[in-house]
Image 1 (cartoon, rainbow, N blue to C red):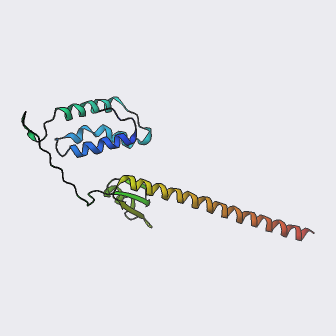
Image 2: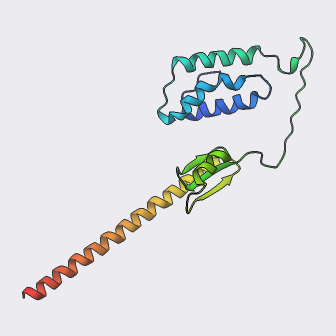
Image 3: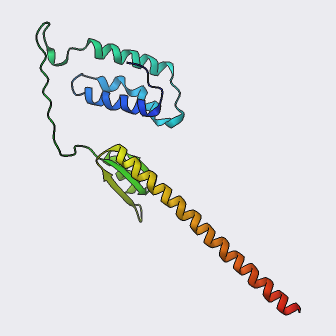
Length: 170
């Protein structure tokens, strides 16, 4: 495993740790420094604490015996697939802090008792981020359009005032 270099890679790592934590006791605690890096956003700084946590995480994963399997005994894994969505990613369009949220509680905190809130759940983070990006692009287009309408109105008022001034003076 190589060290994450981008925010997306750290998010992927913490997601994988969360999945593995179902089988390895106290694995989530080893990932706490990574969650702190995620909170820093795109300008995260990989530090010594994260480096130690990463090495400890690798050591734990490589040396853990999931399910207590004995040596030279085949390890059988059963995989269940389902067409139903297990998790959702939520986009808060209008709320305290608009953006993409990975769990319902974060989304709820942004929209609960916020007048005129707007949010929607999507089955994948990729779809949610795409929808939010399109929403922001449309909002910026609307802002530019409104700014142009305002400028046209101001220009019309100025021309009207100049014509009135000219009529009064002449």
